[in-house]
Length: 152
Image (cartoon, rainbow, N blue to C red; front, side):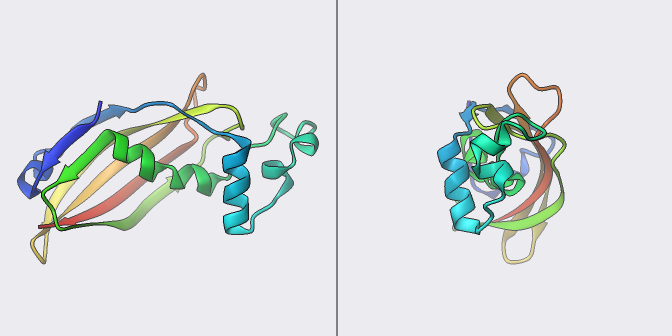
């Protein structure tokens, strides 16, 4: 279920809140291939299903950076922010890829708002811990601490 907030005060009130896991998203070979084309990363483990059958995972896997980039649309399903003039992705403090995402598997995002602090320019900085879960796996595909800024 998407949490909706309106304005900086409601964003501040999110500090410490668990946004819970979102909906599942299937990782298709077409998505992986499109990412490979966009980034010029055509390593066989991502784009060659026949060769990957004999590889370490038995199939093709998503790029780690594809998994990371999917945090953006998956996060928009967890939290909708209204009443601000601008929101920016300020950066990442830590990113790890503990396990691969096999093509055909499903992932979802869980997020927790670690902190929200005021910043210059009539804004707030929101720090979130994200976990990209893989359906049926004990290990996450990606863990990341992300920083966003929102301005009124």
